Image (tube, rainbow, N blue to C red; front, top):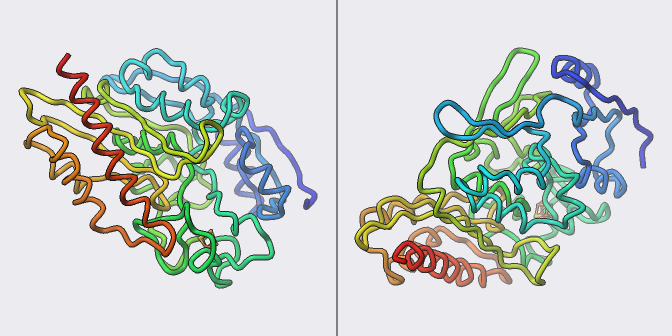
Length: 330
Ligand code: SF4
């Protein structure tokens, strides 16, 4: 591991100044991903700026009726918050589906958004990987890629984003806020992650040196009737091979409002807008749910060994929306 300096920031301007002065600085939240990457040599920062004592650890109501979640709120505190559990239950379920209790106690909301892919070639310094070493190639395209992307990928990288939390945030139109030395900014979560293209090493649209300060959830009555379902190869402590955040408002058998986001299918949480458009105003039936999933997954471009994800996601969408419909009828 490369020798590095460590500084603990206590206010945002000082934190920004520290990172501005060192081009090879990294933000340190819970460290549950970054420290592993430093041990394997994938990340080699000269300076870690610890943000955990910044005043960004609150979950607050917004005047509009949504929630503002600070970037250093831990995953455990986010999942346990009564307002999150009541108004956005899929978010609580998504957070609790990730990692382990110990890791959730350390991991932060900002760090969760910024975590790196778990593609095995990315963490193998001997393998070609355009995300780790731009221009070196992608070992996964013709290698081990059962868990890789079927949507939005490119020949340069087929990795998926590992977050469960971000999938639920995408379904609820979350907005990421940040600070820079030039002032504050914000990005809709859908615009937060850059398209893969031929630059998979550039993962977010954040300005250089920006500090993520939080996430704002707009009010969304439909979110109170939501669910996160994660499919993985073992019952706990595993990344998804496919996941779904879904919210549904059914009135008299007709879909009044619906939110759908898919996980473990792309380099970012995949908001399923084609499926939402197919469903809105139509019948809340298993046939309609399956057809909507097909509409979304028509854009899928699977690799040799991950075509199973199309069937998996179709079944996931159909099953979860059917469950939410049945619950609404009780
Ligand atoms: Fe690297 Fe992306 Fe290819 Fe994995 S899929 S080896 S992260 S370029």
